[in-house]
Amino acid sequence: MTEPAPKVYVGMSGGVDSSVTAALLKEQGYRVTGVYMKNWTQDLPGFVCPWADDLADAKRVAVQLDIPFKVFDFQKEYKQQVVDYMIAEYRAGRTPNPDVMCNQQIKFDLFLRAALAEGADLIATGHYARVGGADISPSVEPARVSVPGGVQKEGSLTRSFSEHVGGGFWTAGPGAAGEHERAVTGPAGRSAPSSSSQSTAAGEAGAAPPTVTRHQDMSQFHREGAAITQVEATPPRRERRALFTGLDKNKDQSYFLYRITAEALSRTLLPIGELTKPEVREHARRLGLVTAEKKDSQGICFVGKIGIKEFLQNYIQAEPGDIVDQRTGNAIGQHDGAVFYTIGQRHGLHMGGGLPFYVVGKDMAKNIVYVTTDLNDQNLWRRDLHLTQLHWITEAPELSRTYQVRTRYRAALVDCRIEHLKGDEVELRLDEPERALAPGQSAVLYDGDRVVGGGTVV
Image (cartoon, rainbow, N blue to C red):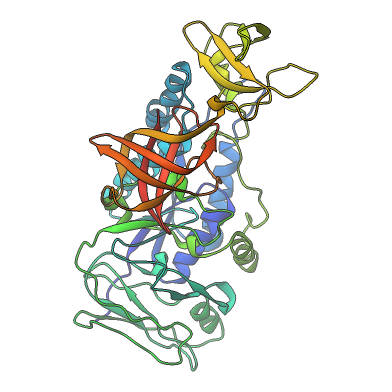
């Protein structure tokens, strides 16, 4: 039975990652609509917000891909739920992560709800992470992954861009001699995506397009000798979805996504999570996308290349205060506002000569920043971690198990154990002490490749 392919709204930021996301999904037969989320357009002194250029690039890619394009205006909500939150946290002396809040409140809540209200079945973004079944164990169920150009590589999950919630299986039949079939899961009552770049190449050669067939009662599918061999039981209807790390460990963004709900994941595709950044670039070049060589965005989420301090100075009236040596209690310098400093910070203290100083504490009421030159100072290292504002994607962690924790983006994973878990608070005991853990930042718990959830450091 052949039915219309799922409709996917792709968040297109004007960068290469979201551009390739839209391209991959269209190649697989999804009905793709590109959406630019207008979250921030305000220019600041000495800084021009790049939103207009990003919007123009997203539009150009949509034209190249021949897909519909929309603009969703979320400026009011972004200001209230991301910017105001960030400012309030810094005023309180904490170090928040606006990217985490943007993903939780805007991309995987507001955007998702707006897309579904317009008739979309799914959303997709250009994040380097993967979605899979909550009961999948990546370490014992590898899958063969097809990447642009027909190159095959080993992956640890069935591909997030070919896997949905629901009952039933689909096969993309051969449109030309030698084209491989693929078994994928999809939302009940809808067709699956067709094959990837291989089918596109076959179509360009004049071959018949692949057929897409749904097999409602097939519990397993197996094709010997195919480029992709996959054996999988039909998942239950509305199966819970889990979040996994991206295969490119240098670009993995699962840390920023830990507050996504399982329900949102059930409506989400993350196609480039199975690719490396060089593979994404190569795919963009192959298609001639205008964003193929565009540099990655830097700075605050959706705001651009502006430092936190420069941004905050437009919203917080800070006062100068003393920089105090933690060991002696003597004032040894002046800062321009305790709100602008975070634990472990070295640069920006403007104290030349001798050993470098590091921030080890703040007294917001007295507007004091405490520093030390001792890298072994006990205030710089922690093995016991207290988290609050918890969010678990599928279920809470177990007290008897060892997990891994990441305390900042790109930080190494550290083994830890759950010492105490009650309500909205958890105590972690790290196997190795971690440096410069600041109140307000996110700590994310992993079970192998799977993101368990996390919370905010107290």
